[in-house]
Length: 133
Image (tube, rainbow, N blue to C red; front, side):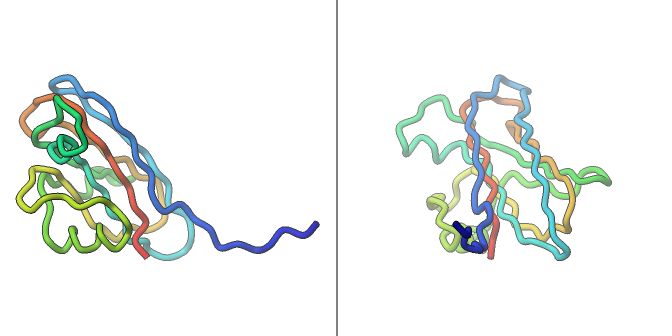
């Protein structure tokens, strides 16, 4: 039987872990194709408490690395990122939360995201990557 041609792609990838103080969560990803892709990257700590988790990472920090080294870093997020998150189906982060997010346009290539506590603290953290159409 013939297989239907489907234009499917990865929309979201996430991982949750418990970081000890000064630990780092590293998530790698590769973008293929010929043009830039917009990617939303979130490190959710404090908001996980609303889902019944305790011992959450109080103030996560994101660092994004490419072949040339560190490209971006952030330990907060903005209203613009919040509206993009809603558009891709991510759960809402409360205004003023200490969760972290990046909204970046990236060329094809290999990347890694590092998540840690902004002040060397530990706790439960969720890292998420979203392809933004």
